[in-house]
Image (cartoon, rainbow, N blue to C red):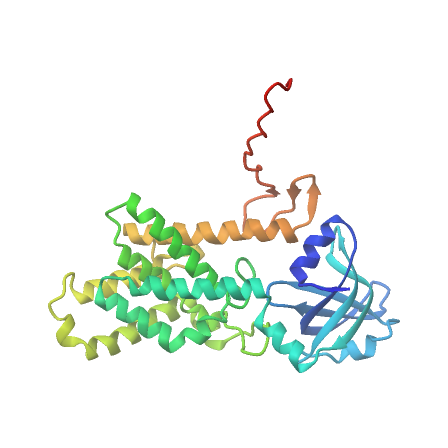
Length: 351
C-alpha cells in the first residue's frame, strides 16, 4: 500500500475505494454509544493538512487499545478508504500501529510540497517587509518576525474555516501580500507600506488564539485567546512593540513625516477594522482606503481557500454540485473549466 496524506486519500476516494497507508496524530479518543447502546470509540485523527474520524466498534481487535489513545499517540492507519455520502472519509478492513520516532518526526514536518510552499511563503513575507520604505513600519515588522517568527510559522489562520493547519497563517499572509502588491499600482493613492504592515499584523493575535505546538497538530485552546480575542491581542502586541521601538529610536523618528503617532493610529485601525463590521468581531468599521482594502483582501483569500477545500471535503449533491461549506452562503458549484483552444486542424482535413 502506498503511504499517502489524508488529503490525497480523500481525493482518490472520490473515484472509488482506495487502499493506502496514512500517518496521523490521534487528536482525541472519545467513548460513544450506538442507538442500541452498544459502546464504540471515536478517534479524531489529523495530519499536517487534514482530519478524519475513525469509528472503532467494540468487536474490533484494537478496540481496547484505541480506547486508551491520547494526543500523544502517533499511528499508521492502513486499510481500504472510501467516501461515505453522509459521514465523509471512512476506513474499512483497517489496522493500526504506532509510528517510529523517525516516522513521527517526518509527519510533524509535513509533506514535502507543503513544506516547500510554506518556506517560499515565509521568505516572501521576510523580503516584502524589508521593502517597506517607512523605517518605523519596517522596524516594527522586523522586530515582530524576529521575536515571534517561530510561533508564527506553526500558527493556523483559523480554527476551522480556512488555512486551518500548521503554518496556515504564513500561507494566508503571504498570499494577501501578493494581492496587495498587485492591486497597489491600480490604486496609486493607497499607502502600500501601511497596507503591507497591516497585513502582517492583522492576525498577529492568532499566534495565541490558533497556535499549534511544536510536537503535534492539535490546536489547543489558550486562555488569553479566549478572554481577549485575536484582534485585541494584535492591538496590544503592536502597541507594546511600538513603545519599545519608539523609545530606542526617539531621535531618528522625531521629525519623520507623517508623524509617528499618526502611523501608529492608522496601523491600529487596520487591525481593529479588518473583520469589517461589529457583528463579525471588529470594534470599528473600515474608515480608510487601506483598511477597506485589507478587509476585502483578507476576505477574498479566505473564501477562495474555502472553495478549494470544499471541493475536496464537502458532500457531493450532484454532478459538479457540493454541499454548503460554512460560512459560504450556499451550495458549492464547481468552477467553469478554463478555455482551451482546440488543436488546429491539419491542412486539407475536413472539419
